[in-house]
Amino acid sequence: MAQQSKHAAIFHQSKNESLGGRVKLSDHTFKDPTLFEILFLGTSASAPSVKRGLSAQIVMHDEYRFLVDCGEGTQRQILQSGIGFRNLTRILLTHGHLDHILGLGGLMSTFLRWESVDELDIFGGRSTLDRVHDLLYGVVLRGNQPPMPLRMNEIKPGTFFEADDFTVSAFSVSHRGPDCLGYIFEGKARRPFLNEKATELGVPFGPERRDLVAGKEIFLSDGKRITPDDVLGPLQKGVKLVIVGDAGKTENLVDVCKDADALVIESTYLDEEAEMAGQFSHLTARQAAELAIKAGVKKLILTHISRRYREKDVIKEAQALFPNTVVARDFDSFQIKREE
Ligand SMILES: [Zn+2]
Ligand SMILES: [Zn+2]
Image (cartoon, rainbow, N blue to C red; front, side):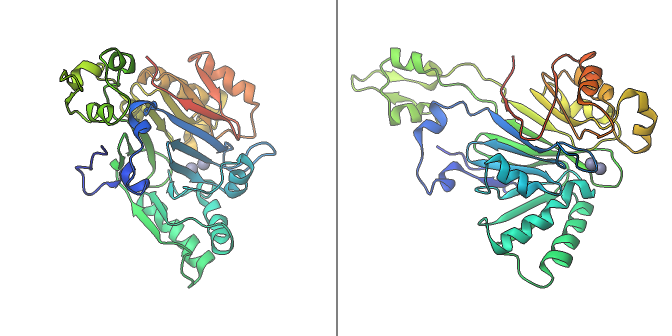
């Protein structure tokens, strides 16, 4: 049932492999495969505050876990959140500024001695990976081997990861320094399985339903022929979650954010200090809200919050333009579903 990727160059893992060859029927027929969950581990800009750690968030879908950025202190936030290290084998980096990568040093140190994962893939732009390489190999490992197969995957804008029912793509972001990236998590378009319709037609619970989902026709015991068209609804777009790291402008982000069900983006400044925001290549809450409107996103989640402001002032500025805005706090988690 798992479709093999047509893109050999894309990192791909089929559900079959991950389940050791077993296919769980429920994965495709009964669960909603178009749902991501995002857990915020750190939401502070530049330096931590009493209440906020540095940038890190985990995107989850089924057994997949993607840690996006890994600011200092991330491993403790992982422990405190209760999510643990299991399956945390992929780290995506938006850029190489220290408030987004320093946690990798501590994480690797812990992996050397205690917790471990089977393998680790770090994804990012070239200059980001260069700095991470210095941190891990120059400071933490210093001639020792990493405690697991460690791969540094340089990525460029485009799709770089594909699973059975979703893809992850990167896009360019303008911020201080080269190779800054944002990420799109997108469910593949699919035709939902109409359980009630199938039951009405007498399709038993079992491999027959799996075959229909896989596009094969089946014959019931009385000889009646059932085709996929009989039990599959119209094609539906998958859920779309966009994560922009630090950014200095939004004009080049409208297209990639188009119709996202949720947009996670920095909001380091308020409009009253828009000039300083521009100087340091960061965004104001107002700019983030304006982008949400232009791109037609459904929900705006602000993060990378500066200690210089009160949270309620950030919310107020964004909500005045875009009401469906929240400011993420450490350990907040959101389910991202397809919004009509
Ligand atoms: Zn930052
Ligand atoms: Zn930055």
